[in-house]
Length: 327
Image (cartoon, one colour):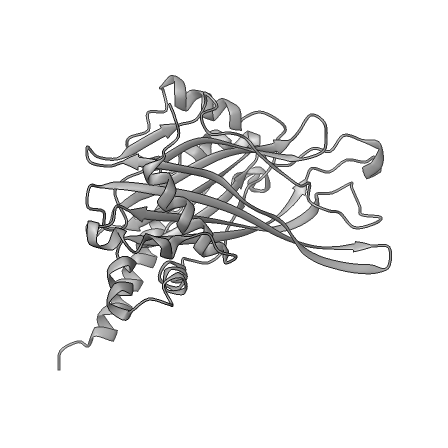
């Protein structure tokens, strides 16, 4: 009897796992506790990594998109920005993309006909990943008597595919700096670089609108009361890109993408500041919207802003396609 589709799927999965095991970017076992965490991708996997300064150069080099020249002044500036600060170890997201693209888009399109939903579904997508981090660097002094410092200098949000030939293909790569304002009153997120290899959705002219959102949830203690809340839920970048001539590579070192101010992560009363603290669960989501055919543009009001965060990101991505950042 011939193999079933299920058998083929199992075999393909095993091949992917073997391949990724061979590609695992491990450091020497000596001093392993101070080495950066490995970056690995599976087919269609999305990665979110918060990097500390001493590992930034290596993390940015791992699976670097082919269009990014590490010797260029712009990329050198990104590496230098992320390499500022004290030493540490990065945190890698867990799990793989779990179908949020279709689920999110379908939720937005719930009120339109099945035919229209299937059409527009091909022109918009979302992908997301989460990581749990202790945001603040340790300090032996009480939290009220020292300047707050973050453990992390930058984060990288990327998606890759495993090609039929067995190579890893970076499809999307976003790098941003993250730190604490000089006034000690906010977290500052500064977009540094965006790379998009190709449209992940249909687009009549190969233009895309992109919106990237950042959310953080926290649980902490105030006196004798436990509190759970969302402390970040902001769009950190929205831009329009043209892929008609191939992959798009954007740098925002000139301030064309404004800094985003976010609330400081809360801490529990009496927290031990001698070790990393300020635990938050961070989720980064990207929405992409292509240029719709004229007949479907008449239905563009389905992307109107909504209380639903997914719908809001799709709307911002659609708007960014026609109103890209001024350069």
